[in-house]
Amino acid sequence: MAAEKIRAIIGEDLVDIFNVKDTPLSLMNDYDLLVLGISTWDFGEIQEDWSAVWEHIDGVSLKGKHVALFGLGDQEGYGEWFLDAMGLLHDELKKTGAQFIGYWKNEGYEFEASKALTEDKSHFVGLALDEDSQYELSDSRIEAWCEQILVEYHDAL
Image 1: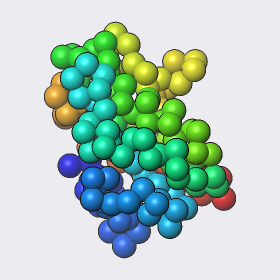
Image 2 (image 1 turned 60 degrees about the vertical axis):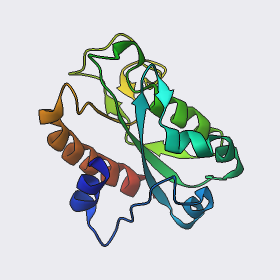
Image 3 (image 1 turned 180 degrees about the horizontal axis):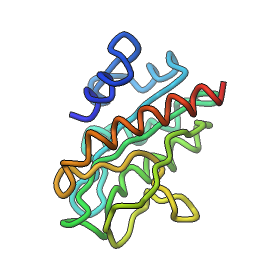
């Protein structure tokens, strides 16, 4: 699981893992750095645990909080909607005042469309993982991204 790999790299004493279905969104206020993951289901849909709390996201103020996103999708089977849920989450969190770190180059991926691309389309709005088509690249991508977000967070302080 990506969240556990991220915790192993950053440090178990520094990372708390929560499942959004079991945790109130208000708990995000207790952290200065949030690393949030979301998977895209079917045809660009938000995973059901996030969907259940979606309407409450705008009730959380993330002003002054740094947020790094990671998303899971299938670029071969669902290439028209690759990581759309991560893009939708980015857009919702942006409204709350979040400051984003961890944008990830879109090189090495083959997909038709994605709502998770930055405006200039050169990066994803977070780490892009494809456990279906590029599983063998996930560990190295996670490791490089963790190093990247730690540097970006340090530089932002």
